[in-house]
Structures are given as structure tokens and as C-alpha cells.
Image (cartoon, rainbow, N blue to C red; front, side):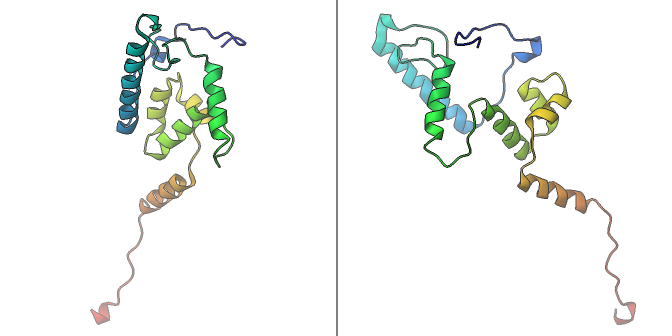
Length: 154
């Protein structure tokens, strides 16, 4: 976005444009959204504006990103969640993906970063639960001596 006037451009690099995996619940919701949008397309008839976008106004016309951000802020204000921006959801997604078992390389590929350092330094933070789980796994890798047995009682 340049001020209030959004613009579209080609991705910075060839690797920036790609497909990412989505969970089944998200795919199902997107399919429901598509069905609603197809109904809106039929209801609007010739007045429907075919922008090719997934998220649009009811008539298919272009939806300004700030409208989405304003709606997000309004919804967020009705919750007990910490104050975050729509853009922060990228960081949240990276953290949850990492917490769900995605390694740094998987995050780098999903976020389309050029270096793993950028991903590690910018987009991930350990969840306390993941931190404890990793510590327990690491401790199990350390060879331990077996408890001494009293051979005279054996």
C-alpha cells in the first residue's frame, strides 16, 4: 500500500509466489466462502464485478485493505486477546506452525524468505510449552547410568 492507495505488483523474487498447504478446517471454510460468493455473483447478475479476488465486497468489487484492518480491529476489541494488528497474524501463524512441529526450514519456505536467518530472527518465538517439550527431548538424549543394583540380593 502506498499511503491510502494500494497497488499490486509482481513478487520481489520468483520464489515469492507459490502455494502453501492449508489445514482441512481452513479449506472447508474457504469452500463455504466460495459458495457464498457464487450466490452473490448470481444475485448481482451483470452488475457483478469479476476482480478475480477471493475476498471482495458483496458485488465482487475490490475490497480496500484498510477496510479489512478496520474490521479486524473492531472484532479484536470485543475479545480478551492482546492488541495485535492484522499484519501480526503472520508472526502468530509462524509461531503456531513452529509450535505444531514445523521446523525453521519449513517456516522459511512457507513465509518465502530468502534466508533462514531472516525467518529465525524475525518471525519465530518459542511457545513456553514447546520450549519445555524440547528441553525434555534433549534431556532424554543424554546417556544416563543405570541405577546400581545390589548383586548380593539378586
